[in-house]
Length: 112
Length: 114
Image (cartoon, rainbow over all chains, first blue to last red; front, side, top):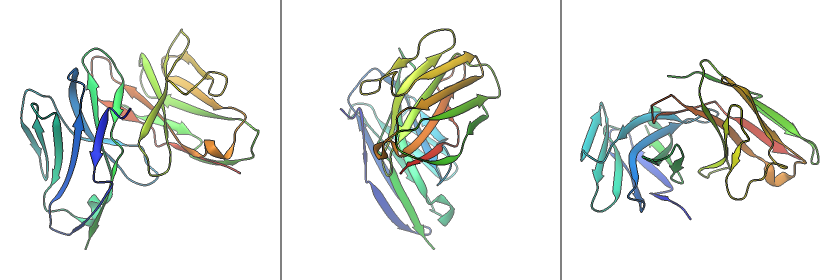
């Protein structure tokens, strides 16, 4: 059973556009929601993360929007650049354990 | 942050053989995690390795197939035993800092079984 559902599977965006990736979860025990960025041949690297006590977090061009009642969160990449082309994973972890649950990933391609 | 060195970065192996993947961390950590990432898919947790105790395996993964060693707080190995083409995947080790929810990953080992 997929604990965290992610969409879309792939995304193509023009340079300068906004990339939006969505995730949904069911387990209300999750209390930390990171996004990871993975380039080919590399391990995932933390991009930005949020806790459910805030509805939005922004770091540079990257913003997480969090809707606790809907159990959904999304990553917005503003002014998308070709260098943002990578696979993005959302994840969730609960307050009682150390196990991360990852979404299925979104392959983002930003066209120059 | 944590710096994780994982070796080998890639390998091509014959079916029926075994491959041991090494993971070295630049500082002591209690828990290390091994993941499998199949092409175009998400990360699936194989097992959690604590120093001084048996690894805890997730459903669908067994010790005979994926034996893990954790001899100290900075090192772990994962062996993929009696390999078949279905084992072709990327294998990643990961750690969390103490009292931190942030996960750090090695660069992965791309395994191809022929």
